[in-house]
Length: 324
Ligand SMILES: [Zn+2]
Image (tube, rainbow, N blue to C red; front, side, top):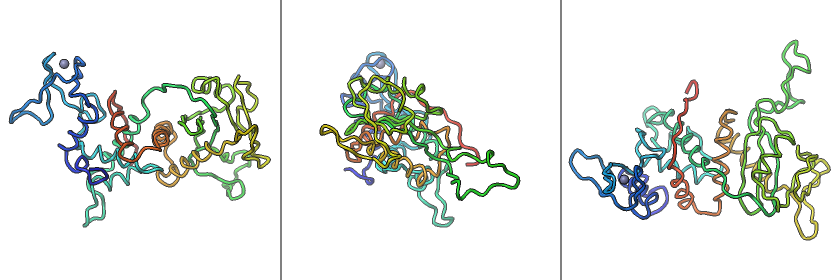
């Protein structure tokens, strides 16, 4: 069964079996010695469910060891449900929304049961898991690169009301409290985004060289910080300040519209769903959005399976936000 009514979202045991089937397609994997398919399920009244014992090294283990779920007091089916929701909503899902969906709303008080803090922790742990794997291969083909400022509240010069006694030079700049983001997008392929506190040709160059294959055809806006940097790539520019967005050269479409479309998903998520995430979490949110974009051609269930496979690995320790 698929969809939100699937048993792995309803009860803990079905969730554990679903996780076992996803992480152990060839049988239980012992986290102590690495042997596959040589463990047996332990049975007994005091034995907790899903406890295996390795026939090779005699050590006990469960499927959640070494995953982001290990030692969590939150039932596994709620974790799986949260992952499914995060994978299926294009602009993301806020911790508040997660809280309501996972614990339900108390009809007497109108408030969700459970705790906001738990939902917040879950969302961040999942986000971390989605983006933790190192980049494997470089982007190639046509690669669109652009920078954007995400988040913060834009104070428009025309509508900004100066405080009494404030001099013009003391006004906050339109990009103050926004996070500069660099996105590198292979057309019809993957995107990789990162928070770049300083966007200059010198800071961009090593990042791009690490991520983009030398054979790529790079496309940028002529106002990009990259404009003057000889990068050793074939490079085409569109001139947005002259209202040029698309042109064709030798049968190739020169544009940065794809990466800008991606920025608009990020901005709608930041503004509409996450209500301006804190700058310190920018990289985490970018991982979440990149992850969803990069498997956009899969259906919701397949996306959630890819996400579940990423839950194995070192866990994250986070401090809760103030005042939550
Ligand atoms: Zn073992």
